[in-house]
Image 1 (cartoon, one colour):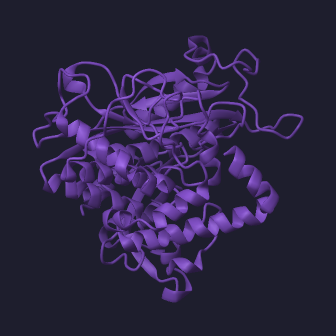
Image 2: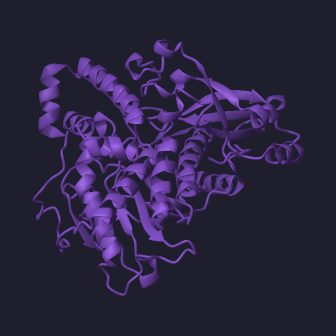
Length: 455
């Protein structure tokens, strides 16, 4: 595993004498940045000797509570585990009121024990390395939908879309509306500037299918790990810029029952070592390699659904005619299926994975996707016929639509243990079962039955 060279820190400190504080962050199982705020005088030591973080930092629920069953808390005396900087992650946080840096770290494979196997970034690295060992270089991009909300609730205490610059609060979806984007120009201007500062390849902005819902696309990267690193940092940046404007960026999968859910669409293809797309084809359905990749993702979908959809709220997103898929299906230029092969020139042929909610951890989602692709290639799995037309009306084998079923499938999957790592899954499942028990305690048995029937 490659960590950053100390020259990166020297260059940053010399270029930014105004920076006094640096946010050090590690991404946990739920995709939440956790860490510390360091003084600039501490930065060089992080590059030279690493920075210890407690083992329990990778055993936390989404609410930041220890999960003893993870084996990373009292059982190991909440031991210090050493982290090191990720190359290229040292940058500025332009949304801060005072000049502040940002540094992403990851667990060292040996010095970071016993927590290292639970580091989500490690899980993705292993999935990438297995594909590269067979001559396949994954190329990826992340698309994240989110709601831009007012920090002030409405008269009923419900979240509400952010006010536009014209003083009007949007009520209609106005999907693809350019006027709606214009009305958010102060926020979008700052967001694009912040992305430029951090080197994030953010491109097209889209008004999505609900009031206040947006999506900004990131460019494909030949280095899949870089693509996901950028997706993770982009999510942190969006929340930061929104906060600067007195707003809240919400990445819940289904924050409003009567509005569209928010997804995280993952675009993926496979290239050779020179960057040539191995899925490129004049046939819109792609090469046999592309079909086998889809076959693998279809075959392993139920096993990893709890990673793509990691919370109770995630499953409320699966509704017919909602642009969220309902079935184990694939198609060409078809947004009603789970795995879409977009149109376009032959050299751009790839798959869009449309299952994940915006609440999924990008590292873990990408790892599960690539592991499924590898499985399909190894076993030359045929995905069957492509869905033509309305996939909602043709759904045969539908996805599980409740959290409990998905968690049990992941727990019982021998393939997932091998593909993602048994040590990782032990920690991840301990966290998710703890969250599930808490959820059950909050909703009660009667509401749980309602949840199962309406999820």
